Image 1: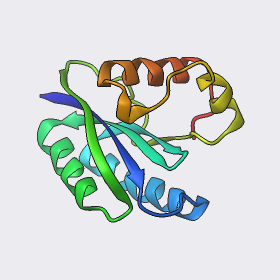
Image 2: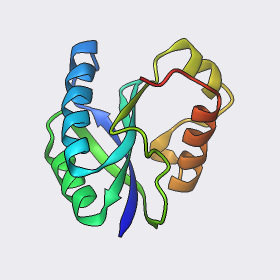
Image 3: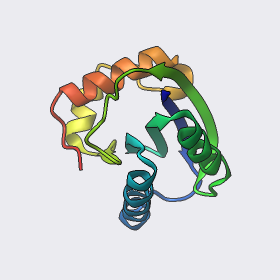
Image 4: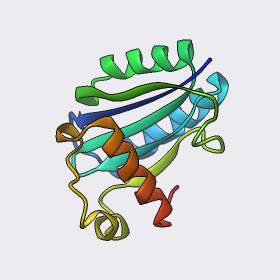
Length: 136
């Protein structure tokens, strides 16, 4: 049984390149071992993350994130059962929300994940990815 979980959190400290690299390196290794796929958008003081995998593995990872001191104000945006992954090729992709191309893509968006419902944030994320922004 596959699920997709989408959450937002506020960075508890600075979002430096070192912190980002640390998160991505550990996420890619751990997620690959757990057969979890997804995407992490970070910048502007927030993290937006989509996790896909079996319900038990995704729930376990989300519970770890809730306890992670790098995150505060963790809020679940959506949780759904799926038959197909949206990000099957990425154990964890990274989108820098501070990049110029993302700023241009989001310019006309009402981009406040805390004030937006999960369906709208999912559409904003899909539109962002469709705009051919750089994904690492």
